[in-house]
Image 1: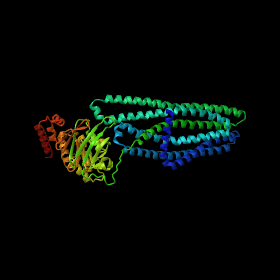
Image 2: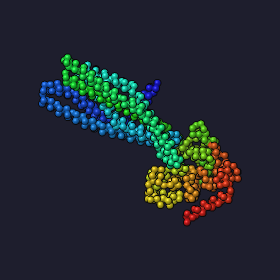
Image 3: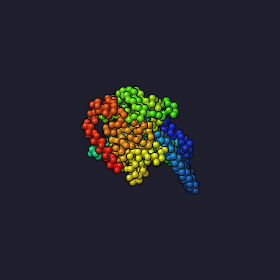
Image 4: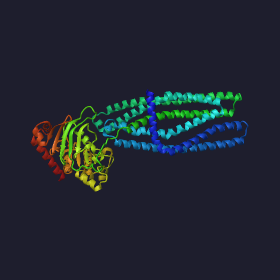
Length: 606
């Protein structure tokens, strides 16, 4: 049953690959025509050699032999030129096909929901997009035309053998057919499975590499270099084992083919010599047969070797198509065009429940009401469900039950793209792309002018430090903004959100990575930004949310307290204890803290 399943998968994968290749069908047709011509010319070589022996060498006709040699040289030269041309065309077909495959898989990644990326290592996904696609590229560029050429040449050689001398043809063909059956029935399936496991383990290894490089600061901070080396070596050892098994089956093909080819030549030479001595054939035909036998063993060997590479390519293609078959991010919007705008920004959660795995609930019957233009603060311990509320509001994930509405419209009825254009999001770990500071801020609204970008940076209190960078707004940031500080990265992402001019603002611990002085800068800019906008703020520093219209205290997926800062302190519950842990609960300490922060801001501005 396993073999049947593998065959079915293989055929389905090949059909899907053909779906990409058929876009190049005219180039493929021309390539096949050239392969036919090349194979035909190669078939003429041994036949002319046999004629040279029988008609010119034995009769000692040197003039005739010279003319035939010129003809053979011309035929081989023409065959070489045609072979080069068809290889050039096939290379173009392969690269165009791989270009479409890369385009589709990258576009697919943009359509997948966040849960896809949250549920698997990034390095493993990258391996499918790079290594697996490259494997397909190699087999299309180097192997596909060679397989077709070998098939045509092999069939042509067998026909010529049977026409020239049937008995010798049966001897030569029979010995090689037996080998082909062994390779196809025993070695090839195991080779394919071996390469699939090799590709899978390579993806795991790439995941460890990507994770370690990304988290190198943490690795060094905790002196875990040795642990990372051990983890890498373990995965590397696993990859080595799978690779050895795959390559062992792949490598055994060549020696077997050489042995059978030499054995076949010996059988043909012996049988042909006996037939020539007995007068049933000529020396020239025997010589031609020896050449044809070598020609026949070559395509059989090439097909066997290419077949193992094809198994590796098919294994990679299966992994690619697994991603292409993933479900896109669902967007069942039913609102007619033009209805996605958020005029006021009223947000309501009604008995919303959600779990990431379908088993353990993260939110339980959450109810909240954010008036237009109000500031809603979400506080609570790590893992309480604060960020999950944001993930549901942005529709990064879909709720399990209940309803979320904006301005009275069910969130699921709004187009996701249009909805997110109305949302400004600043995450805890601000992400910057490789490019200039100007380009990173403009990411919030691509059509914005330079003046608008600078205005947004000024509002975010980022303009001053940006102008002190080596090239100001044209300073090129490295990947993830590694050449600026963490606080500066956060200010740039806040400027990006400001530029987007959202109706609803979401700040997921936006000031957690900055110092108190920088936080005051940000707060000043945020005060202007949040004016007239509905804002959701997640913060561990309670100093940033004391002026919130409503503070929601979340624990174990439930809202356990709600009210203003003063009301919650008076309630003397969870929020009050949280405040006590940060400020000792003393109003004078809190007032002194705020005053000192204000003086620090005034001194910096002076």
